[in-house]
Length: 140
Image (cartoon, rainbow, N blue to C red; front, top):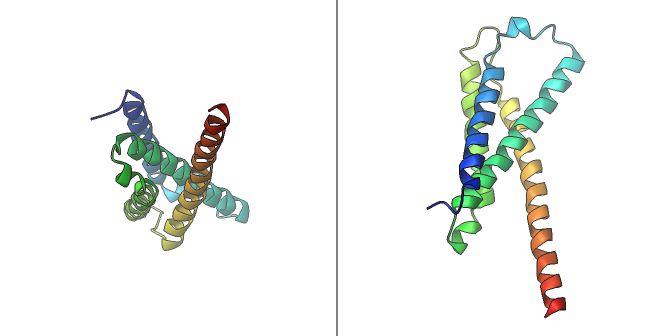
């Protein structure tokens, strides 16, 4: 079912990264410090980066297990949908954390991070494929 052990490593990395995100979400609001503009900006950049990295890890897992060529077209949308689900679950989780509250804005920021990182991954993957095809024709 799995192509190689890299898929297991990717899946483990995704799970550990998700646990890390949920651990950060479990920090009570009183320990986050006063709500300054700088702290707010750092937190939002953190959302973009944390969920962006998670989206690429999900992409790696899904790409590794999608063996049918037709299923390959769905790896980016599926990765994105998983991020949206995780972002909503993370905000729901924050509703039960003292001093924290769920925010639809954070779900949007998390989704934006995923879109940016997945977009970059798409460009890198397709650029590599394009260059591989070009150089393979030159050598033929």
